[in-house]
Length: 89
Image 1: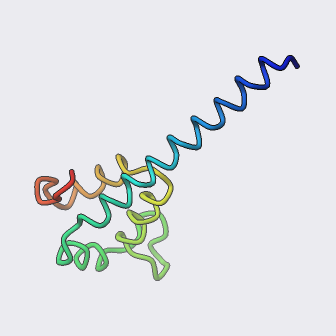
Image 2: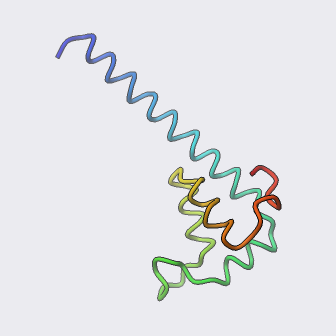
Image 3: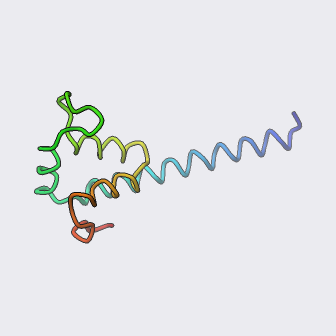
């Protein structure tokens, strides 16, 4: 493998890591912007993928935000609440 290819691969990995970190930051912002009363309602619903567990819908949305999937988390949240209520949407 040439030095040029190694540099390109290293740069691509750096860019991918940066994009991943930014997505996680957006997820954290979204999670922090959910009103407390809405969070309590989400905590009362069962986890959509693990309904027999002790986990809630809020836990699932929180996990998605931690994975950098804030757009999917917002989409799921919007099924229950209006996104205009969320400050940083």
